[in-house]
Structure formats: structure tokens, C-alpha cells
Image 1 (tube, rainbow, N blue to C red):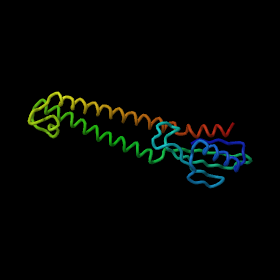
Image 2: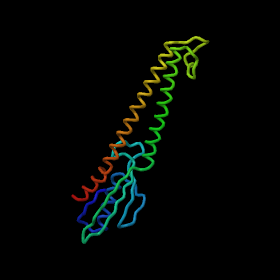
Image 3: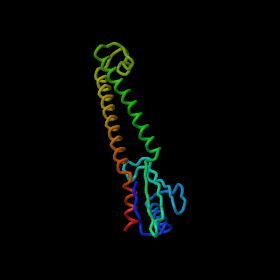
Length: 176
């Protein structure tokens, strides 16, 4: 939450804040002139503090001939849900890839038919090169998905820790 007192009366401060935010691509969700504005900003696919979809609430309070402006930002629930669902699906795919890799690897060693053995068996013959290629591909895909999950976690932490950066720029422009 960011707070600052600006040297404007409340109606002018309200107008200046609203104009500054809408000029930066914010869409007004609701407003109670001249005390409160609720806006949304960013994209569902954004991966930086400035581009991630968020809700911004602005509260204005008259203090003598000045106005106290308070900004609070939070990531939108749909941005968080897309991130969470993507990570859950990646974990499921990692499990599937590892199951396939271990199952095929065991089949290649023991030659006992297994759930995935049909992938490398043609007319009763086992193709060892294709089998090893499937094992390597499944392990590589699992490693790639692990990297993607770690990257998504890092992006989420980064965006969450700097969520107020966008509104801080707006607040600084009002103060100058």
C-alpha cells in the first residue's frame, strides 16, 4: 500500500489520479467520486509487475486543502488461477513423462510387457533405439517442465514483490 499527500484539493486530485491511470492503460471498474476508484490494469499473460493483470484501488481523503492519496494493488484472481492451473498441469505431465520413462526403461531391460511397451514394439519385435529415444524424450520433457514450473514460481514471486511499482510511478508523477 502506498500513501502520499498531494498539494491539490480532492476533486482536482481525483481527476489527476484518474487521468494518470487511464492514460497508462488502466480500465475503470467502479468509482465513487471523489473518494474511491477501482481499476484493472495489465494482461492475463503479463509476466512483469507492470504487465501482470492486477486490480488497483485508489482512496482519496481530503486533509485541509490537500489530499491524501492511497494506492493498493493486488494480482487479479484470474492471473493467479492461470498460473496455478498451468503449474498443476505441468506437474501432472511431469508425472506422466516420468512414469513413461521408467516403465519403458524397465521394459527395455527386462523385456516383460508393460503399460507403455507397445510404443517400442512392432510385430513382436522390440526396437531398442526407439525405446531409448522415447525414454530420453520423456526425461527431457520432464526436466523442461520442471524448469518451466521453477520459472513460473520465480515470475510470481517477482511480480508479487514489486506489484506496487506501477502505482508508485503514478504517485510520483502526481507529487511532482
